[in-house]
Length: 206
Image (tube, rainbow, N blue to C red; front, side, top):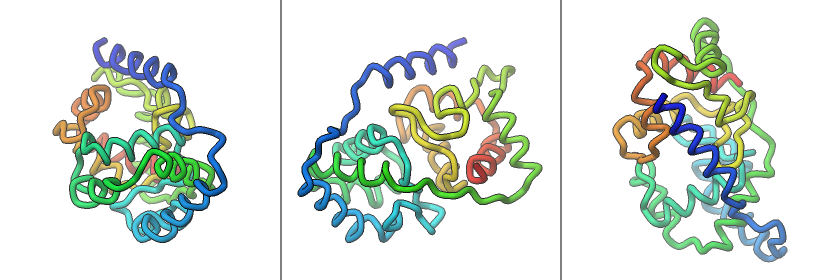
């Protein structure tokens, strides 16, 4: 019951907050964001937001509000996870709000990455967890926040096609509260390692 309450509260908060990005960014702001993306961010995330290194996330087609909020969290050092401390705190430190909004829009409009298949048995189990949750553990369906197809909604990230390695790292960060987000800490802590691995395989294949 408590997990479901956390999730419902998170959904209400996400949908109540207006998008962090303005739809009327100037051409100069868009151009500046593209230069930062290609000149700096591409080294880890790819010029089009599709990373070829599994430890770094795909950014393409993520909701713009989610991307902006995460960049601001990196800048303020309020988001913690191993790569945040190693890379993103420093990378985001010099970004102003206009640059963050520009980067968020830049990546949100890029084509979504294609999923990659691996162990089909594992993927099938992950699909069940994603679509139905785990009632015995009071874990709701992932799609209730992240979309039935993993497309992301409002301030909830796109999961479809995300690297399994990155997903597992983030789930461990939620478990340890290094990345302090109550709904996800509760969900990640309730799931077994085998459940998380199945989810990771399914999400990567989406």
